[in-house]
Image (cartoon, rainbow, N blue to C red; front, side, top):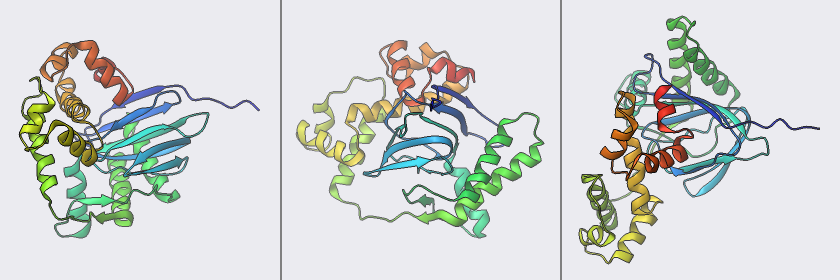
Length: 275
């Protein structure tokens, strides 16, 4: 029997009904996402095939009919779990939108919602989220219907699965990592040596790098590149040229920026910008 293979094809798009959000309709087979994070809640619905990803120290498989939610700022990967690859739809929902919706649903101020790392296997939620995504994508849909479906899907997700993230006591190493993050992001265009970073926390370069990597899951230079990519999205969305955005965010040139951007988002920045 011949197995239909998906191709690497992705469309990023936006809607005024969910301000500040990125939405994706995609299928992948050969592309593999390296460790990365998003500054929004990732709410995918797997339509066909299966995706495997590493998240919070464990490996997961999300098959068709599941909703593998990823919390903002949390490192994860992504690649095919079956020969055919996978097809999915994703809503990257801004933190403020989710926080405000949680407060409206509860009728009182709520802490920032947090979702456990397990793959959500809930056919009803999957159907609601998929329907909302499809209605938002269809330009002929009545905006009232699309917005109602969106609120229905996200409120259902919150009511059934939102938790409060466990709070750990702040340790001296946490403060050191925070200090290193501040130094790494203070000027994304400035060259920075590991020795410079280590000096800010009174550690040797070896121990500073090890501490940072153990805490974040990424080496300092890789973490800094993730920040550069995340901050590049807004000016790209506003219409700035790819070359100007690359230089302004500390990449050596446009090709360097494009290579990193494609690895993280699956498309080059010019194509992402044009969607």
